[in-house]
View (tube, helix red, strand yellow):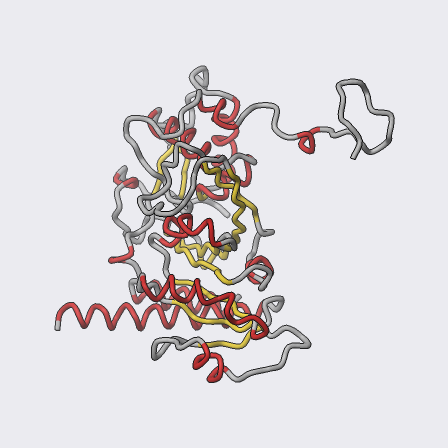
Length: 137
Length: 207
């Protein structure tokens, strides 16, 4: 392995560009160092569905939002998405996305549907629908 | 897909009526290299997305972190896919992290899960023992799907069932993780089984 120095390496292909070079910003810097969502303390499930709040959709006052917040808002504008999809779409760790979504939730920009707790989960009608849906795929 | 939004603002409450969007979660577990990502990819309508969960010293993940050394920051990748049943009803598939040391992540993943698919390879059946144990202990409905690799000696589902010492009734399905129809069949068997388990439990609780 060649030693990596700050000088420009001559060997072609030995330089890393863009995402290959790794993140320029440490992930939790985007959350101001917070690892947990705000005072409401919601722990969002990976499949919790995030929808833009239609009431707040018109507000263009984005001064309170960072670029990552805005990216999440844009992703939600396309369609309702799960927390996991948003993390993949924004290319951010789930933990970071949870904190950012907590902010958006507190600002009233999004609403989040919690998954049904397991005790109530498989409503027979829903399950039948799922089975028929799978068959029809 | 056009998102449907319910009119009432009780959306964030944990009630599930017909108007609110609903998501169901299915886990795909099994040993390393058994075909979890392949299965997720075969049935998913979206290119399998990859999400990364970062574990840090803050360790706010779950209660059960016994024996888990969280001193270092680690990144765990999870694959997932989606199947839209209809507008407002989607199925999400999660490939669980393969390494044993990320088990505590499973607790979070399995919370509220409809059920799980345990993928097995008959050439190294023991790789799926931990997953079988995990779901049995937590009473999470699961099916064992034997991924029929070419070149592997084929066993009947009964042999696999006995070798794994499965609880009575746990379905064992032979499948080809690359094949969409085969994967669909596995999921159908799981949902059917989860429904039976749930009904049985309800009857137990009233009897």
